[in-house]
Image (cartoon, rainbow over all chains, first blue to last red; front, top):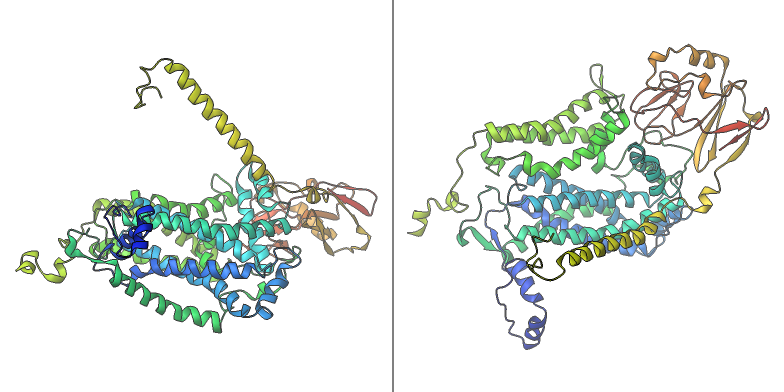
Length: 425
Length: 180
């Protein structure tokens, strides 16, 4: 986007007239067509486009669903059922929206873990990364608000538990809790404001995505070997090379998405959400949606007092597990970006990924379930929480100092074309 | 402020006055924006209809010994438990050193009405409703994150920081209680 000073003159006189007054065509051409992109991007790099596609899917299906939804505590549950049974095509539209949230999160996790492996957060892409973390936080808030709207048992108790997190803040906790809920308990005012915010946040996300792409286009893409683009020979124009690759990835991504939406819309949900919200009964086993499970396991693992009480401590760990991502560019100061050239980092990275999946699994289990011998989920999840934080706070800073990376190729083209001297002859 | 300006307004007449005007204008602007934003946030607080429901009366005569009922107060569930003598003795036998949030059973009930344990039925961890007569301490067990409470509703195990909250209440007669 920074480079759109390049003069673009459309052949068509009407378009030229527009371009002279609002250079939007030149802007689009330089960002979506001519944008020089490293020529070695693999399929892990297509998830950016997949995410943009998913944001579009969620906004379009969401606007349509809002035409039939009623944000009122006594009517909300029935209105969602009516969407599924009575509204023309509503069954599919609702299923695309609800399973779409899962697909969106699946894609964002791949996107984040790709960035973690290939060091995409390192200079000069820190702001790009930070904007990404902001988008992730906004996505979590949006998904949470959206999950409350069907006003089933899981919706209601998710709202109760998550808003209660704020009550852990000393002194001002309770006033904040009442402010968020609009009452002493989760009730109709809560549902109303959550609907309002659920409609608002996706547009905020779209705005931050715009900044995210802007921040991407200043330094250009990172790439699998993590060596910056040295010359034009290292790049290809975004169109048609990556528009086609991204399009193909989106199509492949839509296959499981369609399977979920058409054949198994409830497989990732919880049957208790087909019971209307009841403030007097907590379901016997509360679990959040799968994409929140790792963080839920972190919240739950802190069941001991340490200086602060366990509740506040759990909330700090829960919040800290995401907020720590903001500081990642300054925790991992290794000059080599790509994990491919970091022999020790690789092991810790994959352990981190497996540990994340373990936390996801722990989050779905009851805390007193035995995992190994006498040790319960509550016990072993503490180890996983410890590793999660050690990875960022201790392992990455130490690796940055002591790891000896493998030699890097001189450029993106070199490993493919051989030495630059040979390539030119 | 005066040193960084590229207008070199140190050299212009009345530079001190101009600085004062900048600061004063900004200050008034911030106060003005705050005055506009505050009502937009404050509107989220509980409205009059919610606040109007802040007390409730309940007739205890139908609750038999060993039984427990859940009533609604301010939109939240409240446990009214008619405890057995065994449960009361059990609660009073616990040494204070075993408790995470030390409080005697006597402090959690009204003298003369020890059999009635009245508590907000929300786990002090994250607000789920604990399940009665279960857990390792014969009290309450929270299914969400595994907190366990004893027969006095005191936290014994798990992530909850404090005992179940005893709401303000008074006995209007031997069988009628007013909560709130």
